[in-house]
Image (cartoon, rainbow, N blue to C red; front, side):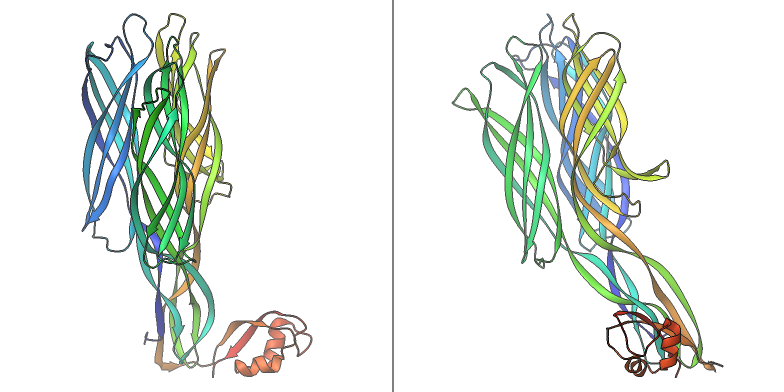
Length: 503
């Protein structure tokens, strides 16, 4: 009979959905009367913002928009200018089954390719493909043996620690501030938001998230061809209500910028800036159970099976900056004007027998030659990211990459981009352990010779071996022989193997 096992439930973070989808980037831009006409398309960039992601039954709904920016050169050798537009999108993904447990979705996107052409001096046509990678996480529950009945004895057991997702919360917020601008500013070309450092603290039913969002404001100045930029920091301090959270909980927050707008202040040396963003918070609780790894029958013949499982042993935060480099050869004499660096979602890999965390970096550099003509060079390369800890491919890495600082130079035909990548997020450290999966006694067949089990027991200094033997119904001599003890009183605290006879 196989009714001897008493089970409990542990939970782990599982990834039931790991897929991707593509969306078309299709937009036609008509320049206004006050915009300068198009002579030469220099560079088109497209990024995205996710405004909604939610599960409805067995469907994942994703809503957001593309931000499309076209850098172009007007006729007559004028300096670089820009035009920007938005393209909303909505995508529905069918899931294999409905997900009812707490979940969170990581959605990362990257531009695959884009073609831009000037239909005429006032119309621009844009066509491309954008790919999104979707990882949907949920809480997966597994039954494990935690005890056995009186007919059997526990031969081996251990404490198993795991984390479970206990709650989540989303909050949108906005922040407004002023930026001091140079007196010779001509035109704002582009605004690139990025996330900075973040601290998360858990309280009773609340999670406090503090952090920074940076805005890189790119602009031209009067009478100069080069492009300049100002970095503005927006600090936030948000409280998210999540019932069930305690001071002992661990929380993770994902922040995304939804929009950034600027307007002229009455003071001509300042502009008003409004940034809107949202915070997606997930909270975890730490739990533990005593799991049975082995057992034996006291009286009857039996069969048993074991299985290997993984739990979320620990959750550690990551807040690390990695310095990376991408190089390429260029033909001709150019001066770098401005650069864009995109870093893809990092993934674990094995390189030369070593576990690494790698990502793909794409560097685009706008340059100008002696004839005052603008070009754009683009180079992609693999980079290795350092989290400050040893990489384990069995762990789950949930990280965001943001480029904070970059410097591009062109010397002797070599274009070199050195940039800083801020890694923020958390790592789920996996723990593999063995549990008793099935146990069956044949009560019609008695044991010819009762079996013994070795029980792990931590003895205190001064404890008598006789008392330990009485506790586990075994012989003093058996304990002494198994552990090579020289006295019948413990001279120090240590772990003992206690043979237990079948009775």
